Length: 324
Ligand code: SF4
Image (tube, rainbow, N blue to C red; front, top):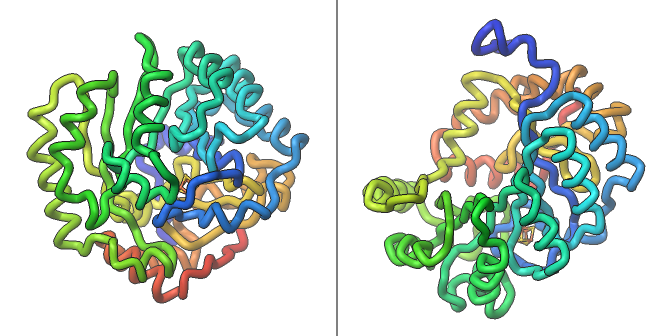
């Protein structure tokens, strides 16, 4: 066991600080890099309404600081509004992660009026041909532009998330120039990770040298862009950090309640319903999920996005279950 805490104060955390909740399986996109294989998974189960109610009550009661609500596409969930209302009323900050392709104006108006709701919008290119290829839908860049106009408000925090492949990795400067037309507070670039055979076979993923080059370009351009925070997210860095510190800050809850520690690791720890509550799962061992064998051993060699791809290849794109 290498479990350790950063400081004695952290030992006092009896509950996560932040969480990612993939609220629904529903999605109308078909992204080439979808880590959840959501289009295929749409017939898989979701937590029941009663289970979602219990989870929301638990998150509020235990004073979770913040939560990313994603999917699938969260705007397709009938539960989105009551969940955001109840969580923000309890002081939980929400980051809604959306494709920006579902324009439910009633939901948009309601969410934009809530100062504790921020938005992360996925947009890989302002060009339709490239974004359509990545997202598997037509006119997608134009539709996201229109979505950005709808959520733009004085108080709204908007982040853009751009996934890089061989198709758009040379367009980073153009992309940043386009963002100037919108009140975007943050832009995050990251490389597509081949977590499915389909993605690997597409040949579109960047190799490690190309990832380094893209990260360098982002680093070069970041200081030239005022009013917007620009950064490159290295998914392998998050895994290295998890390996080193063995501290789970919260993890991911899939639509059916399955727990995972990181979006780029093929391991799951069972469902919330297996443990009775999220808190029970946390106490039973999800709080130190990074430190479970075989996960800990297998991630020791992850130093780059290419190493993550290799891990998925070795496990033949299956997800391993780890019992807490
Ligand atoms: S929008 Fe998200 S959930 Fe839907 S296919 Fe794309 S990556 Fe997957």
